[in-house]
Amino acid sequence: MRGILRIIIATAALCPAYVSQAISFEGTEAAAVRVEAGASTGLEGVYVIPATAGVTIVAEAGSASSQVTVSRFSNLGGAYGEPIAFSREGATVKFAASAGDMGYIVEESGRQTAFWVVDYSQHTFEAGALGFAAEQDCDRATLTFSGKAAEIPYYSINGRRLVLSRELEVENSTLRYDEGSFGYVQGNTSETLQAINGGTINVSAPLCNTIFTLTGDRFLRAWGREESVHSDTYTAVAVAAESRATQSVRENDNEQGSDNMDGLGGSAPCEIHFEACVSDAAIFREWQISRDPDFGIPELTFNELDFDYTFTENGTTYVRFVANNNDGTCEYAGETYSIFIGESKLLIPNAFSPQGSPGVNDEWKVSYKSLVRYECHIFNRLGKELFSSTDPGQGWDGKYGGKFVPAGVYFYVITAEGADGVKYKRSGDINIINYKQGSTSSGGGEATE
Image 1 (cartoon, rainbow, N blue to C red):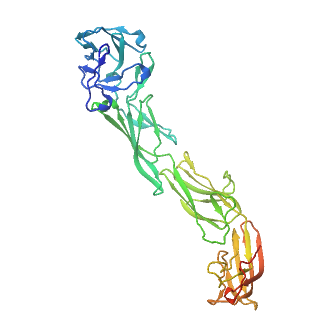
Image 2 (cartoon, helix red, strand yellow; image 1 turned 180 degrees about the vertical axis):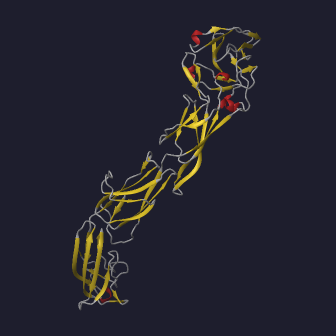
Image 3 (cartoon, helix red, strand yellow; image 1 turned 45 degrees about the vertical axis):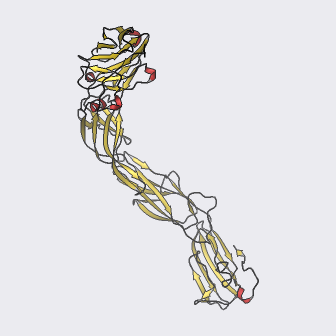
């Protein structure tokens, strides 16, 4: 293809991701590492070589007879480029690499190809000591670094300053929440840094004691010369936790549900199991229970990670888990659980048919909600007690001594107290209807409140 310059660079087999077949450099001790440059830079690519001294850049023209010029440019951009000498043998164009970092433009028949060459010897990664800053943040760990890993700049055809990422790797251990085991498990993590400026490194704060390892950089890695430095043991200060609440469900078909209520709570007594798991640095741990959503003054506190609590008071109660590290500099405040207990209700039926259709009105049960105290007694017409219970979910099956009592009228006495403080004293008749004796009544009975 005539009139289009083809630039050829030697490949580095050990790092194919960065290397193109387009350009070659003669006299380098290791193959060039090619980094893609964005289309807006006007550059075909950025090439990093160990050093530029004694290096020859080779470009292959599209035609042995085409007109070729070569120029170089600095941070001022291609508009300020200056011509440089080159040699040519047919389509092969060669010219000496300038000292240090430099941009180059090879023009053939009016078509320009620009690229930037980095002299790595001027940006060498040096693995100095890795330590810790005196002050540590709860979210970010601050490391100190005495080595060298500064930014590697390059410049677009218009003189715009850009930076190559060194792809430095900072590795350490940390904890991660595992939902399956409801706990924190240790694993390794890493962060990639573009460069290290000012001698400090900020990474995510680990949740366990760990050793940091800094490895660099991508260019040494490509040339098989990667270096690493290790820190002493870092003491974790960051705090993390997870919490959950599980409500016990009563299978009472005569207990009324919640009124327009989402989430936890409903009918008292409401039993909920609270549990939490924490990271290593969470020394202070506390569950707080309050009627105030801002937890100004918690009514109750529990230091156990898990506990059971029964809610018996009408209205909304708030529960949350908090944790702090040893000196209180890092804290965690978890999700606030809202537990709503509805107003109490008590409805009492006046008839049932224990020997009628199975499963249809064959047991006498009150209909209720949020009763925290309950006592029921049932008598026959002679005043003999046939049944008693302190559980509103329990009904009477119409038996005494294992046998059905005769159809007729019986009497109940109920005392109860609701979560809202309402006290109930009820007494009345219970009509037992025996279908097998020819009754045609539906037997449903009315409920009295």
